[in-house]
Image (cartoon, rainbow, N blue to C red):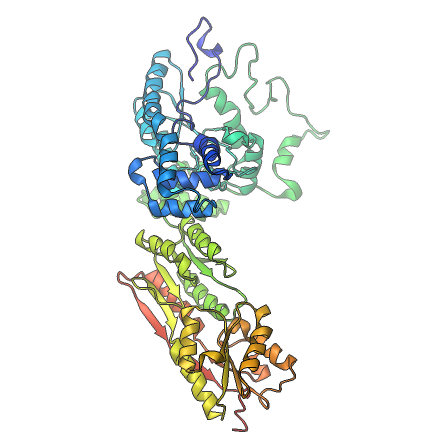
Length: 612
């Protein structure tokens, strides 16, 4: 609300709160309280604020619009919240829309009305600044009223949107406020400090506040501590944002009764009455503490560079990102960067580019030898193109696959390489449709870039080599019913009773026993999955079986100790496959590219090659 006109002077009027709170503008109030409460009432299931927020965005989008309804996204959010089968997509639409929309338009109009009243009273207006209200907030700022844009790091913004919006507001004379929210402590809704840090780093923050955050907001001191340690803002600047800047922005924050209570100025204490304490040698102890323990200095920020070069932080950002700047100005900026040894924040650079310079890689299981050279190939191409690799392991869990792909999308990766199963295909395809180059490895997916092996040919090579070694009764241990495994078995052309499945290494002894129980004359065992090779070899030797005298052993994928044990393998060109997958991300062909690589037999002694 706004302060009421009364008999006191403008400087003595009471403090006030924000106009257009999240309770009425589809903000945190809906996610923290109202949506969870209604869902629990209907289903008995308690969901988290973050799960409620995912439902809200799926129904109304970040900018709150009935036209943003995405049934597929609602279904995914229901499943993630454990509500599948308990609520339908349409029921969720009705719940969310019924909670958020009735007050939304009224609240937006309220921002304009409050701004008009603030102009009449000659006081600032503090408004709810979020993705849903940003257009109205910018319109108010354009009127010239003294505007405080509250919590400009609201979690509904994406990174680039928040920065551009804040820069636009500052250009119109608005005060850009950031809030602690529940960024560092509870993190019940806010996912991390990226927005907060980016606004600090860009030099766009004027004041720091707290916000309700469902009753779990962090303290301002905690936010200052974390931000200064991260090197995105200097300690004096952060303290000013919480004290002097607030006193300057809000009439009545400092009164005649308490002259400088809310200011911390150099040379005075918190109440303006005390000088800094001196040590016996006359040194300011606080100044010494600011230098950090063991003489460590704080990280240089973009604001430091701007100050030394005599330009704005926005100009420094344009120089670093290759924008159009006068040559003399650019020279001053680069000289300042060099002298201060400033390292640009890659996160901030990625915001203005709209994408990070990171290639996301989502794999099923790091225990498989297949992935070692694959990742090496990806990493070499990424490094040659000034990119980093962000790796995520799904541990062969379907729910993690979809979640990791979504996380990569949220990180705005430059491109995505996945070895996931079909459960993540819809998420991957959505990323590709939105402009992120995506490559599927080990499978062919229509309409997508793919890198795969000729798995039928791999099976044929196995069968031919064993036949050449005089082996005719083959038992197969395969890992799953994935297409690659099925195709290798097809190439081997063995009867169904000669095939067993072991999902994990712990399942292998039973699978090997089953083969011997149903096949009396086995003279060869094939393992079609590299991650099971060690377990199969161990199971055979554990039964007292001599390789290759009693039985031949042939495995899939080259691995470090295969040569030492003399194990014959079918090798995939995984390094080349990794390189090509990364090259597809970098080159981003307009039409889907499907590349099929050929397997290679590496013959040693485990199939009786020497005797044959």
